[in-house]
Image 1 (tube, one colour):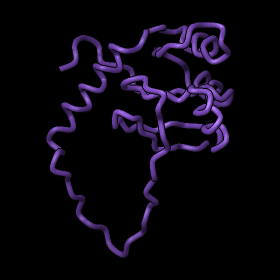
Image 2 (tube, one colour; image 1 turned 90 degrees about the vertical axis):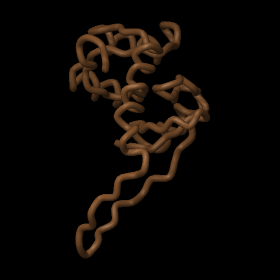
Image 3 (spheres, helix red, strand yellow; image 1 turned 180 degrees about the vertical axis):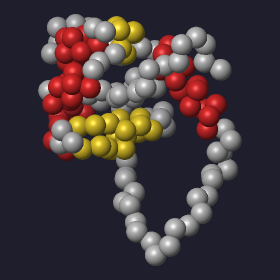
Image 4 (tube, helix red, strand yellow; image 1 turned 120 degrees about the vertical axis):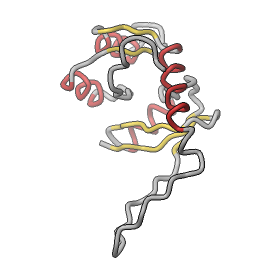
Length: 139
């Protein structure tokens, strides 16, 4: 499993999970790698920072925008919910239909078991696993 840092032309950053670097290149060439926020397929691989071991732990530094991050995250979740179709429990089947060209390509969301999720990834189907959204309105 290869986890890559990705970014779209709109500046949205996200990560993608692929079977290999070749899987990423293949999916990107076919226009199958899309931004989960704006659905742009103009996606590029971003540099990943290696983990460094230091002699003693340092206090974490908060970026200046740390107080804005919860609101930004909430806005991203709202955008994702607004721009995707909820297919519910049919997610694994619908993701396969889209991947194999049997259904119109579109952004979908839904629920899948861990086993179904792993099977989709093994088939080369790009997905992002997120926790179930909270019930009710997001505030």
